[in-house]
Image 1 (cartoon, helix red, strand yellow):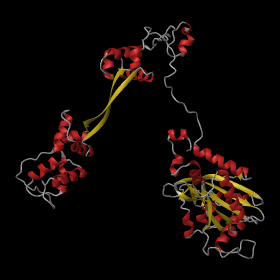
Image 2 (image 1 turned 120 degrees about the vertical axis):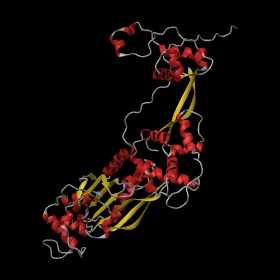
Image 3 (image 1 turned 45 degrees about the horizontal axis):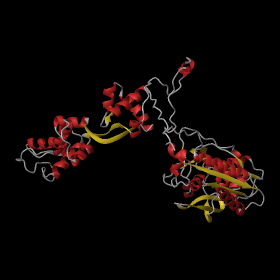
Image 4 (image 1 turned 90 degrees about the horizontal axis):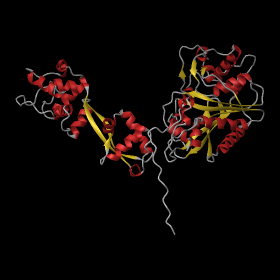
Length: 503
């Protein structure tokens, strides 16, 4: 039975520079540096590097890399070479002085305070300067000492033997030299690059250009074979930011539960941000929302009838047209000027207040998912800017049980199973609760604060039915849902992380 013959080997069709470089690598018995190919083939360095990378992607060339550090003298180092290192200059000044010197008397040496202090410290550690002040030499009759860093600096400047590692580290730390990291590559033909034949045709075409099509030269051109093994760039199409995509998913759940959206301004007045929510103007309870004030923008309070009703609730007086007060209030004068002050909105509950003032007829289910700002210390679970989802549920018979039901429905829709509640306090709700979910790394974190709006909030706004309200921490919920352990990762602009998407 005749032996099977091997399939014929197809000659490599390479662009002119690639072909010339591969043949040069084949002809050499030792690896060739990139600079050597530049001189040998009269090509520029960038062209050589580009061709070598393409040859490597085709498995025709391999490289050996050597990573080196090259020291070079900085401008501060050049001054030290010319005038001497700071410790030498201080030592010579003390030796030439007729009496001990204070550090201030060394100011004419042209040294900064930092350099002067460092030089004095070095001389004292070497025992060349006596302890105490003013400064004097420990042994005035000694000859000029050797300064290793000065010798190391001269060695770097003359490209002589490399200084000892501690001397190099000191010179770098003092800014007298800098280290440049250099990579040297030497190239050789791979086993495949030496074995495969190379086509003699240097005029074959590797890519179709507009000119080739317009001039019709594609009809007679010789095209190089397509290498299916060659790597190609990986392109990633546009996609939403994972955090923004998750926020849209959360909104769809709320809409599915029958809630409609409402929006409000980011720059608010103290009236809507706090006063309408029965947060006292001069009370420590207001400090739980550290607001950021806005300068240069005048705020405007709503019509006087509404302001008068809110002021009466704060002061514990009957509202206009009524004979009895809602409660004892805060027992403090209401400041209308403070109510008009502008702030960056610290809570989307301000949107709820605006909504209720304009939509007093029940039933209503409203949500607002938007940005807020607080003077928070940034850490794994806090940020100066954050998203919050405010919501209100109002109709006859609404109770805290309905609010808990909404929280449980949201958790279930998000696939969160571990949920617990505890009583809490907020100035504008009573009773109030906090809902916690478990983060896989951070443990239990608060995400579901809410409660039943107090009469001091509802009656000034014209609402006569019970209203359940919440301010869900959707940013923290997103951390649980997306597997993020640091809130700052949600605002990342790392393209690699964004392309991979949520974990």
